[in-house]
Image 1 (cartoon, rainbow, N blue to C red):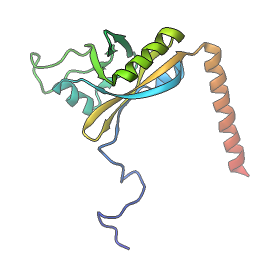
Image 2 (cartoon, rainbow, N blue to C red):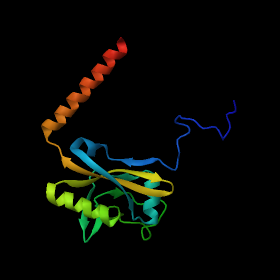
Image 3 (cartoon, rainbow, N blue to C red):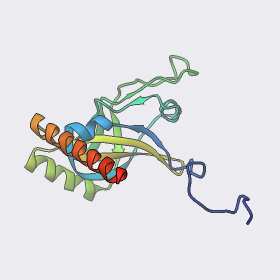
Image 4 (cartoon, rainbow, N blue to C red):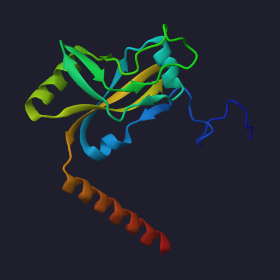
Length: 166
């Protein structure tokens, strides 16, 4: 059996570099109950793209707002590019425009106004040559909800371990 470039199969080596995760907001899934997700484009400058591809982005404190019919990404820190001068570089915490269809923006606006939910960035990833961001419509969790979730995870982990011993 040939093991050349035409062979298809699974495994970590064969992971597609055109569809890779660039940044992840793991804390968001802990602090919010994610009800719905939406993949959008993001309007970036050239030095921002280079910094994101180098993994110099922090989504932890980010949030999204809908203003004037546009979705905006606030408080996401993209470090300045190391090989660009101070004049040609970007502002690390600038407000970035998110690219979504009007229908999607209107649907999210209705949900935000009625239910008191929030939009938070979940991850930043490559899709082909485009950088995309996944936005989550989330409802804040209370402390007792977080504790119950951790307890359920611990029980599931112990159950898997007990089954594996048998």
